[in-house]
Length: 384
Ligand code: CAA
Image (cartoon, helix red, strand yellow):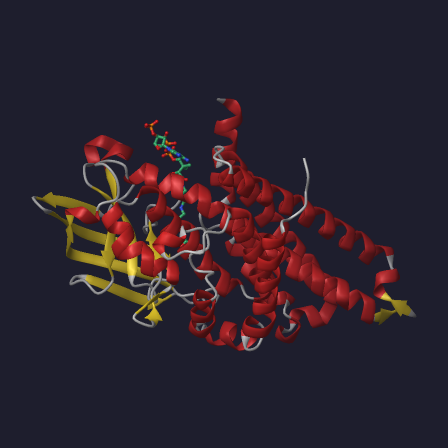
């Protein structure tokens, strides 16, 4: 067993770190304040090949491994989690879901431009539409319906809290096709945002990841060709669960990045700020906080990398991705809150960045399966 990264993985990590510093740091406070979607940053990430990192080159992707994806997600999330959530959803929910479970025609038509993040020179990204006003953690309780009508389906319903809701061109929509069959009566469909009957609700005014583009999306008699159903009839719930297991590695890596960003700021500040006649790093109260932050971050990183390694090596990663997500998101919330504490009064003002990281950390305990849902997945796995 060894813990070394390859030359290529180190290069990708460095490219992501440089990108975050040069392209994401400038304006990050203003984008958060104004809830401005980071379109320019996402467009440049697409040009770097970071919007379809794990997609095979024949479908327009970069053909990288999941370990590289975790490294890149960590670096970008240290600076701007609004950029990294957009990147995560496109990479691991949309592109990976289509690459694994889509038909050849779906891959040619949709995956190729989605992996490039561009179509005809314009931004082209996707969103994953599972959550509903009354189906969040209880994901089998889908109210959105897809009625089969010969060669097409007709979708009606509403989806909530959709990341990339307005900026996406393509939606992967989970809907009920036969309520009597429970989770086996659910299907997943590729729906284009421009199709008649699709409408985008107002942007949510959020606590954190305020630059990201979160909307409700409604469907009124939206006609979807049968060839846009993903997989066999009734595969939709399994599609959502399997895709989310990979998505959770992305969000775990996002949480890891938020934690390490907050820790790096706290560490640097503790070396400059003086109190009681010496730099605060010389006070044991601060040293112990930094020691706990560094330990939790290292443990979170190892869990993320293990889940990624399992995925890259064809091993079932459902358990490890849930463990990585619950641990990393709780480490992020704790570390960012303590980083504010280390900064004292300065930590409470926007210019010092840690208050934003603290607000951004919270959502990692909620989306792509709350901490409670991760504990359901973990306990079912260890008890079975
Ligand atoms: N892989 C394959 N199949 C799976 C699976 C997995 N990981 N998890 C469940 N299934 C299968 C089960 O085996 C079962 O199939 P069978 O009947 O054939 O055995 C079927 O799916 C139903 O599963 P459960 O009985 O376990 O379903 P449940 O109602 O008890 O729910 C749950 C389980 C884990 C709580 C699930 O509902 C869940 O994960 N909920 C959270 C949903 C979520 O993560 N939402 C996030 C929204 S997306 C988002 O946030 C994106 C964004 O924008 C950032």
